[in-house]
Length: 326
Image (tube, rainbow, N blue to C red; front, side, top):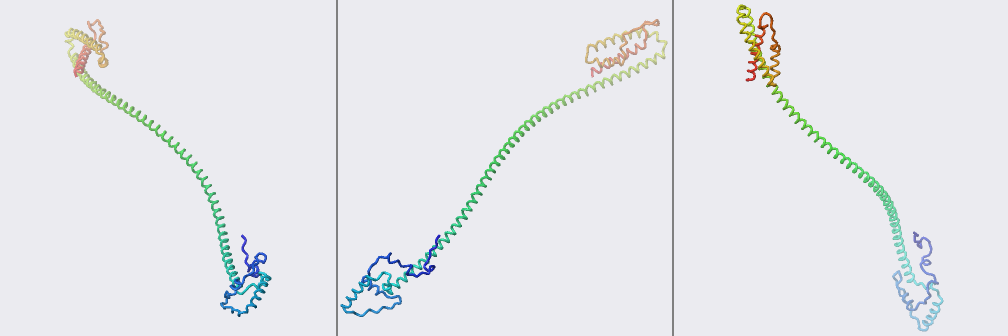
């Protein structure tokens, strides 16, 4: 902005710069009243100008006519027009205008300084607004990226969660199936264990029965062996009575054969006891009882052997009867 230039800066006279030119100001002849009023104004020093002495009428009229003609010829800027009062008023007015001009100049300078400061502040604010706008744009981009990354991460987490839930559900199903299978296997094992315990108990019972039967058979067999031993001793001591006892032995042999045949027939009719009876028959060697041989010495051969077998068969039959009854 252009700074106002004052009169002091140019160094020119105050009257030349402050007063207008004669061409610009209209020409006006001052009247007597105005002249009198100007003269009546007190000067700046406070002293009253002395009043003129009274003039005679003729002289005053002539002087007034001269003044009128002189006023018409005198220009506006003629120093004769400036009275001391007018000059003082003009000087005071000029000083007031200069003070106003200086105040306005200072005000304008202050306004220019404030305007310059406001412009600088505006520029700084614009720069800060630009930087803030850039930062906001970068933050928006970062937020968009973060939102995109967050949404993708959340989607990935949701997918992993769904997969984990599915795997957990599948694992639970497999676990339930495995538990059911284990329970069924445990139930089957318990049943098998119960059956095995029952079979074991039955086997133990049968074993005890068989042991008891074997014990009875052994005791009977001992008795038979004792009888056979006693019979052999008696036979060795008494050969003389052998002829008398042949008839009795024949009858006993026939009786033994019939009893043995009846025992075998009964064993064939009862299939549950075949194994036990056969084992006893094998132990007693009863397979060859049906084969009878004769020789030149008598009607029956091997008489002592037949009697021994007959006694064994009787003992076995009694043992079987006792075992069946027990």
